[in-house]
Structures are given as structure tokens and as C-alpha cells.
Amino acid sequence: MSKHFFGDTTVLLGRSLRHITRSPDTIITTAIMPIAMMLMFVYVFGGAINTGADSYVDYMLPGILLITVASGIAYTAYRLFMDMKGGIFERFQSMPTARSSVLWAHVLTSLVANVISLGVVMGVALLMGFRSAAGVLAWLSVAGILILFTLALTWIAVIPGLSATTVEGASAFSYPLIFLPFLSSAFVPTATMPGPVRAFAEHQPVTSIVNAIRALFTQQPVGTDIWIALAWCVGILVVAYAFAMRTYRRKIS
Image (cartoon, rainbow, N blue to C red):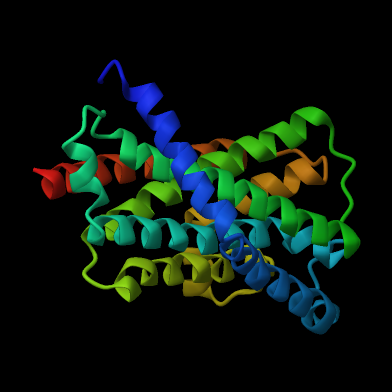
């Protein structure tokens, strides 16, 4: 790692964050869809869904938070794609900067933007009646899981951002990730699903992550869900990072 890595990454992170402050509509757009889903599920479908929870907004909020992240990372792929096409990477390679600092700046920008979007969605959920008596440690645990999940998905987003040939292709990968919470315990208990769908729902990463966050919010025993959730997040992060860096090295070589 270059001795200039941290300084270069900080400078480039500032550049990326300035782009976001000049176009805050990206954060607003990221938050609008999850908020619209939350409003629809709570006020339109919520009365017909029996989850056993006192408040449906309390039950489905963890899934909405994951959808918020999945929506936000599409912009990471888009920004990377535009920088690749604009020759920014080639320009920085001709300068005495750490090569990977450009990539890390985009990843950290994604993390900051998604944290803001999650805060907006959480604020709307509170207005809709979400309440949690969870302590500080539980809230920190939720934040840690969401940050890990965001980093994992962001490194997935880096791959199409670097390798796509069109803007549409760079961001289209996020659609399956947005859809994944619907095939999990995010909105209805998996016990209500037919056999094959239930089997998939109970063994995909979103269900464990949602169950862990929900248990932390409601002060219920998290059991093994939190360890499974962390294993999924770390595993996806490591694999995505390896593939992203391999793609990056191939692109700049």
C-alpha cells in the first residue's frame, strides 16, 4: 500500500462528497422509493398482513432499510462508470497518487450517502409510529450490521461500475438486490410461504440480517441470526472486494 494512500483517499473522498452536495437529488431519490414502499405496505397492505407484531412498521422497517442500501449503491456504480468514461482514472494514474485511492474514495462516498439516506428513512419511520426501546448497544449493533451490509453491496456495485459498457448496465445490477428482501422474512413470516419459496427465503442472507436487526430493535434474543448475518456480510464483502480489485487492476493495466 502506498504511503500516500490515506492522504490521497481523503482528498479524493472530499472531491466525491462535493459532487454529492452539488446534487443532493441522488440522496433524495434513493430515499423516496423505500419511503414510498413503507407507506404503501403500512397503510395499504399492513392491515391484511398478520405478522404477530404489535406494529407492522416495526416489523417491516429492517427490510426497508436494506432496500434503501440496495437502491443507493446503484449510484455508486453510476458514478464509477461516469468517471471511467470521463477518463478520470487515467488522469489520476499519471499523477503521484495511490492507484486504489480513487476506488476507495467512491466506496467511502457510497457509505456516507447511504448513511444519510438511512437516516432519512428512519426519520420517516419514526413519524409513522416506529418505536424501539432498544439500548445503546443494540442500536450500535444495528448500525454495525448496516454499515457492513452497505460496504458489501458497494463492493459488488464497483464491479459493474468498472466493467459495464452503458449507464443502464452499470446500475441495472441493483434491481435483483432490491427485489431480494421480498423473498425473505422482511415483509411476511417465512412460515406463510409455499415450500420451495420458503426454503430459499430461509437460507438467503437478507432473512438472517432482517431477523437480527428486528430482534435487536425489539429487545428479543438474537440467537444465531446475528452471527449468520455477520458471516454473510463479511463473506460477501471479502469476495466482492477480491473480484472488484481484480476488475480494477485489469481495467487500469
